[in-house]
Image (cartoon, rainbow, N blue to C red; front, side):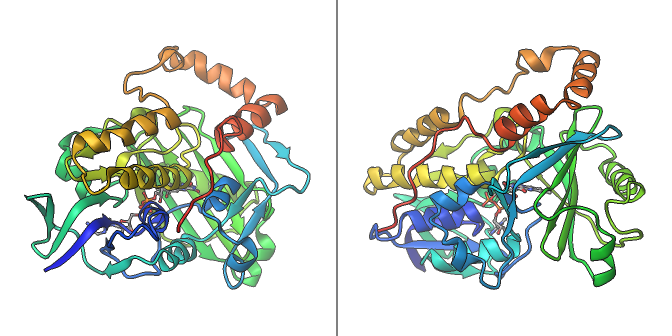
Length: 377
Ligand SMILES: Cc1cc2nc3c(=O)[nH]c(=O)nc-3n(C[C@H](O)[C@H](O)[C@H](O)COP(=O)(O)OP(=O)(O)OC[C@H]3O[C@@H](n4cnc5c(N)ncnc54)[C@H](O)[C@@H]3O)c2cc1C
């Protein structure tokens, strides 16, 4: 039997950030993940500079042997319409990373005890904590297992019926011929909103890698939407012809549509496990990292008593940071769909809307205050 103060289930950015944030706290921390690392994660791999700043990532060091694609603009439009480019004159307003590299980098530096290739199976309540898989005792169990996190399910079964974004994506290394045929600029990813406003597709070139994907808050016929999107990109001469790659699927919850409980006695959820992605962009890495940082503060303040009442402070901090959750449609959502589609199709043709609203507000969260960078000693 092994004992921990904190047992984190999931070694993605949420789990590793929490362990990193608690480094030097004197707490014994384990991270359990069902996969070996480095591991693939279905993701476009777009991160905002805030993520790198709050995590204290030394960009020069990170770029040694890893992909770190600078992004200085976005090309945005509705599928089938003319695109509009927002440029930031060479400033790096985002980065492209590969999750297989990024997640491993964060996990290896966090100094927690790693329990890899071990799936979480069950947890049973014991005095002052939980017994996980009949083998590991923990005073606090952290659900950081992503959208399908088994800890989230163990404390709250409502999650199963939530409205999730479902997405498919493929990332592959282009050969010399494909690199020549690909007209996507490395520093300018392209986004294509679907005319029914249910989601968007992207094509993102990161060094020699090309990442293509599409996500929708509607799971019907996703594969055929992805197929049509790729055919569109090919017809427009954006991606090489006849690319034969396997598209893999995953899902995530948008913060304002998620209804998951985030704390229970001796349990706390962070990252996708709690359903935190930004509503318009689907960015999930920054909320995963920020939720872990807020959780680290709350855990320190608990001084060993992880009752639900003590962990409630995390709920309050999350609400302060990300706003109130709105499981019911807000005013904009209640507008007739036809009206919204007509407006959106016109607005997406304008430079003002694509730059100030889509890029600055929705994607770069320029209005959001900055958290202090992580302290880890
Ligand atoms: C197609 C797609 C594209 C996306 N693109 C972007 C993007 O470009 N930028 C962005 O910011 N966000 C993006 N996201 C969202 C982003 O991927 C997530 O928000 C982010 O990975 C959340 O991090 P996390 O640590 O909470 O979970 P994850 O990164 O999902 O990590 C969870 C970990 O838990 C482990 N785990 C799961 N179940 C178990 C179990 N039973 N036992 C043990 N371990 C388990 C998994 O192996 C995994 O390592 C995208 C999502 C999708 C689906």
